[in-house]
Image (cartoon, rainbow, N blue to C red):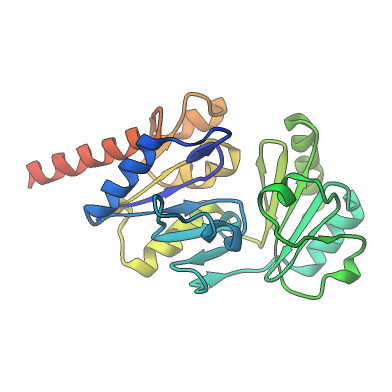
Length: 257
């Protein structure tokens, strides 16, 4: 049995929607007894809502590895951002273009931001730290350009905060210390009793590096940043092609035995 963990935005889902060939390949992959799921910077509640008659997830690793789930309403593991780290980041940046996600609420500075349009159902306007009374799963901060996001990333690293920070295009995703997509996949594999040879991942951006760098069977795309392509084990044009590669590997393993 193979487990394929896929990023969502820019990997599985695009501005034009899903590739039909990807959905067909995923369903066949699962029909053969393998596992397919998401490993995304998006929050868990939003990701389970993306299931449909054409697309089923065997697992979800959400919030850059901070939350792991096997089915809707069930949490395998969950880690929270220290409140002190949130407060220090808020003092440093201010609430501008900030999103704070707790277990039950999404707080936003801008009610017309990307998170509201794509993730939040009933967002709450963020005005001060006093509003946050629940455990924080993740924060996200958006900047106008990738360069501005990279500058802010360097600034936050200088603060020596108790958190993990990942750049995803013009966004910075901030979660609990030691969380990452790679660690999340490893933790889930441990729960499932899978070995490293049984695990694969695919992603397209900088926040995917922790899984691409740690999992030998890793895939990325020709349009991914150069650093991501350099670290990936194989460059493919689609998830369907990545699944084809995994199936060919299994055929070779069967022949060798």
